[in-house]
Image (tube, rainbow, N blue to C red; front, side):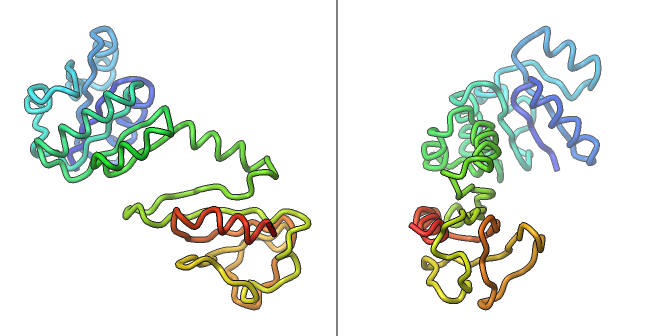
Length: 220
């Protein structure tokens, strides 16, 4: 695959090295001259100085034949614009944008960005694993954007403790995929599986039913 990485900071640098090691053709776009010089010393001619938001720059590096563009600068707006130009002017099949502010996700999706990665959300997910007040953690949004994989920790005192999965109704379109028991470890559940306190339940559900899943498994 030919992958253009917009942003030669730490994220762009390490991402590009991994992609190169995997055998992909990679080009890094970076505006800062000194940063470009340092990257070129290590990575060679794959580094190009330029603004990834400008159509002329993207044209000059062959964006029209790119399989993917990944925008990982520190600016959400710049990442959005780079992906939009790549998508709508050069018909790049897949665009991925880094986000600092998770509140921008709706805008990014509405404007056609294929996938977003929020470092804030990733860190928050790890923090929430330790917070009993936040039993539901989004793990993965599926490509369609309609469904996502979530993890729910059953709190002590929940009404579902001691009950079979088949005995309560899940929200429409929701399915329990995996249960990670405190003592048993991970296993694929059936309708006869009895939930216990501190079980971690991995399920697929629609984004609109997240709160319903939280309510059912937290016993609220």
